[in-house]
Each structure stands twice: as C-alpha cells, then as structure tokens.
Image 1 (cartoon, helix red, strand yellow):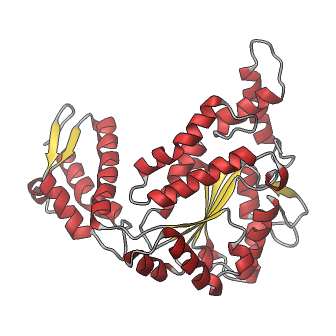
Image 2: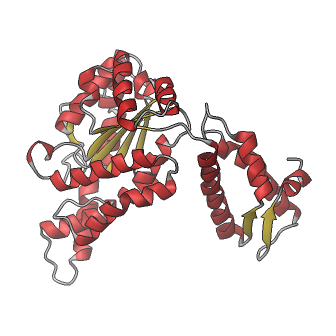
Image 3: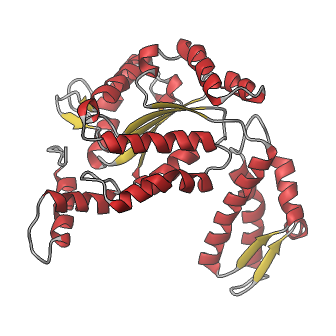
Length: 354
C-alpha cells in the first residue's frame, strides 16, 4: 500500500517529492510516485532497475566491510533480500514484510551492528530504525503498549512509529524476553504483513524489514561453532534447543534464522580498526587533525579488552574512556591544533593519566 490513510503527512511528503521530480512535464503517475518513494526512503516499489539490481548484488560485499567475522550471516541476509525483491509482487509474498530475520548469537558479535549497517545501506540511514526493547513487554497486558489501549484513548508505540515511518527496519531486541502473546502478535505480522490497532485501524508492514535478536540458546551456538560444526548443523541444533523459548510455528515464520559466531582475537582486532576509523574520521571533520594508531597501542587495546564472552560490546566504551578522553584533554590544553598529525601511542595516553 503506497499511502496510509492514517498518515496523511507521509503521503503528502511523497506527493511533494513526486511533483518535484515531475517539474518538467507536471505529470505524476505510478512511476513518479515510485521514484519519489525510492528517493525518500531507499525502497523501490516498481520494476527492478539496473542500478537496484547492482546494489542488491553488491549488498553482501558492502555489509562485510562494516560487519567483520560474520560472512555467512551477512550472505544469508543479503540472499534473502535478493529473493524478497525478486518475488515481491507475486503470490503469497505480495503483502508480507520485505523480510523477517531472527539474529541469534552471543553478546557483542555484530547482531545490532548488522541491523544498523542494513538500515544505512537499504533504507538510507540509521534514523530509519524502530528499536524496541522486548524486555519491556513481559506481561500479557503489555501488548496494549504496542497496539494501543483497549479503550482506544492511548495509541500504541509500534502502531504510531510504523505510521510515522512506513519504510524502515524494525529491531526487536531480546525477543525471548517478551510475553508469548507478543510472539503471537508478531507471528500475525510475519504472516499477513499488517496489524490492526485497538481502534480497528489496519497498518501495513509491507515495506519493513523486521529483525528480532535473541541470546537464547547461544551457549549451544558458541559450543557448536567451537567444535567446528557447519553452519547448517549449528542452525539445526539451535532450532531444537530454543523451542522452550519460542513455539515452532513462530520460528518457522522467519524468512531466515541467522546465526552469529563468537569473535576470535583476530576478528576483534578488525572490529577495533573499524571503530577507530570512525573516531579518526569524526575527529578530522571536527578539528582538522589527522590521527593514526600506533601498533603497540592497538595490540594493548586488543589484549586488554578482548573477551570471548562479551565480544566487542565493551570496546566502544573502552575507546571512549581512553582515546576520546586523552584527545579531549589535549585539545583543552592546546597541545594539538588544526593541521597537526598525531600518532596515538601508549605514552600519549599515559600523559593524561590513562
């Protein structure tokens, strides 16, 4: 559904963009509307263009640069999206969400990072993520917070967010913590691509990618990958072990169940490089100072912060407390200035008590 009757502002924005595209001939048809939606959201609704085909076929390669050490997971996601686009307007796929994924694996291995990377590369930005902490929906009554109160006076969070941004990525964090009635609610969304709120209004999820994350069963995932089992063997084992958390009919509705491996030290070091490159780019844009990371400091940061149990979850905080703090103190003291090039070393950090 191109226009939501419950969201005239979004429909008006699409029409205005279509008029802007049509300023040469002032003729607005279905193709111009599709172009407007593509420009505003990154989502294509019409026939597959050569550029879109190229983007989809390159998606796996792009995502692997942003999420390291999880090549199989990335490939599974990219292939599912290629299938979805090819079958989008046919048969039972016509009204379903773009794709639905269950991301499973230990903490800090890239589940949320892949969701963010997908939002950036498929929906034109992380601002197009609707993120819900499912630990906040542990009771049967909490369903009203999602779809609205029974008396219709208080709108539901999920309904309102999807009405505001109908082209987005819906991230359901720690889905295993939600009440079973919430699982059944999303099973309906996976099946039908729509949801009816407490006032009887129907909202489409057709142009949404849904990603649920879970830590359930991750002990088995870690052990199986450590033993050298294949991806498919681990997935079969995982499916059997998590039935106590999710009913089989719920698991079977996902487009794909995506497994994430624990990070080894080499992959962790690559994650550090990616995060430092973001610091370097941001610092140069803000202060016009070039940064580089001394190899001994890099090795120290890896050895002092690597944890097989926690993955890269604490890495960003460690970089903030060390590198960001030292750079901030150096700026305030005037010891670095625009135009400088600075190699970050352990000695540099120690100057600032770090």
